[in-house]
Length: 409
Image (cartoon, rainbow, N blue to C red; front, side):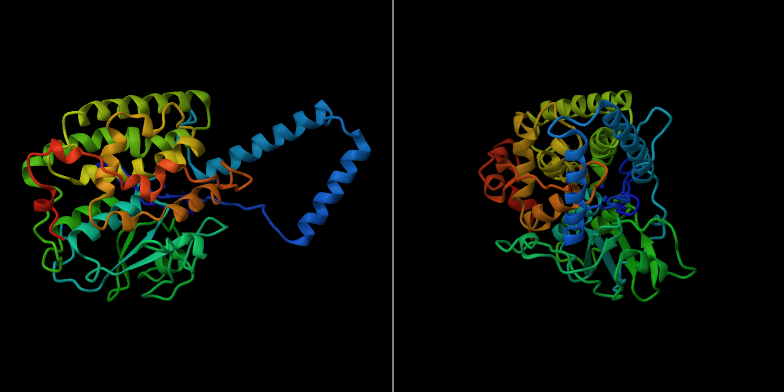
């Protein structure tokens, strides 16, 4: 996800196409005008006094309102063109990832890999989940960036409210391997330098000082099968050969309409583009919900990479996308099967620890300035709290194989 560009690295069509944030999961989110200093309060007070002298307690003159609205609309369109590039119809188009894994993947014996992620980014989140499920935490250390006010991914300690004190949760951190202040600096350390968008997730070769990959689906495929010699759970296969075709089929459906679909809604720059995106999104969610009425996971009894990719969007849906991205037709909680399916995956050992809800909310509501100029973060929906997500879901009754057999962690 490129917060420099915006959720944040992008998949391509193996996952199907993919994403960053420009916040990335590939965006230049926040051009913050918020300044809580005394000078800001003084300027606001002066403006208020002048407005009272000009038109008293009445509303501002229509001409002023019209002028300000036109200026804001033009400014918004300019910011959105940088944050989320669009096609001629106003539809959001996600840039492709720059660094892809070649067919000659890094050696399975490689011990100098380091993962860079950002917690708000769903594309980065999928790499954290597969890394945890495969038991690669020691083999592939991680540095966790946070979105900065200028839209870049920064390394810094976060306030206590973001740190998820009640659980062993992944938190923002310093750059543990290069000591850089932000992700741009890390990218520039590679041979020949780099001035493009600095997106997450990004897999880094510590020894070679080189970007190995910043395409999320490439990374999770590699984590699933390319490092079994270093994994503590090598027997777990999230992309078995006999399910490859089904996985690809689901990816072709989920990526454009759900993973990227929520961004097509939130970053639409015309009513027509929004209408098309929201229809694609909810028709696909309805289809998946119906399917899950008779199948524990997308491909039957086994969790696959497709489930991981869908989960990272679903876990953010009521928290962020329903409100901020105008995905308002239904909350995830209103679907018959999708919410319980999400809870099922959330309760798999180690998955909940990858979900830092405070950091996710801050990353969207406080950093995507064009979508939320006041940077006001709403209260967390009760259905998104850890205690609610940890309730019994009873979906194990749909499986013919015990979950404990698959996840020997």
